[in-house]
Image 1: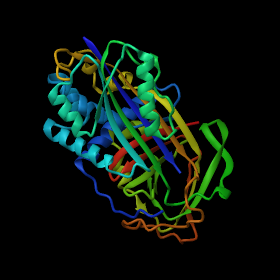
Image 2: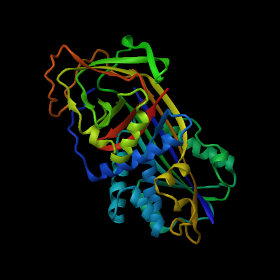
Image 3: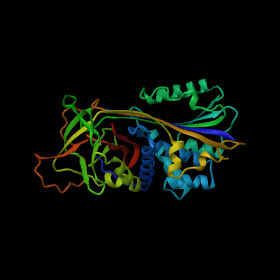
Image 4: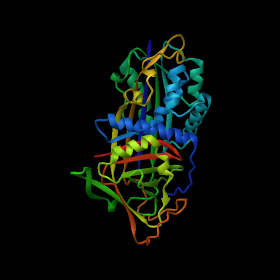
Length: 394
């Protein structure tokens, strides 16, 4: 039996006007629910709960890998992805991958690559599926783990623009590996509603009900999409990007220690019910958001079994390479996110996000407070597709 390693590399940098009205789709709903479940388990398992991830990257790799599987192994993947028709699932995800690959690489770079051990040949059906995801294929000598890691890092460093450097070490690779699949996503967005650097100030951030630390808090006041959701127990606000179709949504629990409960609710329902429940406020939003910079390493071989995907790690798949079966040994993800004032427009005081007005009769001189001074959840979406997801806690 040969081993397959799945490696995900994710980098996000958040540095003016996007007023598109978005619509929900079945694909967006399925990605949302799978992503929320994955994040919930990631948070439970994490020793450091400052997390950034791209469950979408995991989903793309699972969708590609599933073409080499059958039976229960494939069913576990399609069940997580919320799909019942395998052919339609493949078409949907390959089309989304292709759409991302055509975007301006200055702000979004999605790359799928397959490194194949020199003595193996990809199964033709599997190769066809991989190519439909715009994946590149390159032969590599896994027995020389130093050389293999260096080869992968040279490619990854170029794609990731310095946000993550040398993400792969020789210890991440197995000399007896037959295939390595890599999914890489890089996004650098310029926020539409600018944070003026001169307004950033050092303020208290509650890590729990009795402990505070000082954080540099950015400030913005103006109209934004917003919802105070009593059912979720959180406030929700949208920060649109200049880049077409992209937006950041921050979900702030009302209780200082309310994030675990919010994550549990979101794992059951997904995020989109709350995202699409926002409305443009009549009054200003008085927003404080900490600058943050998160980097982490995740191994989805520990996380995916918690959401029902087990057999890819224990059973061999016969449809990946010719004349052999392969088993996934690890699914690595290196991820980074940076959110600060850089690149935002100073002094912007409002936006024209499309959508119905909230029924708020307060005078415009008043403002809704959104002070992210406690652990919160954030996501970056493309239309209704969750691309990045994370938590900030300390």
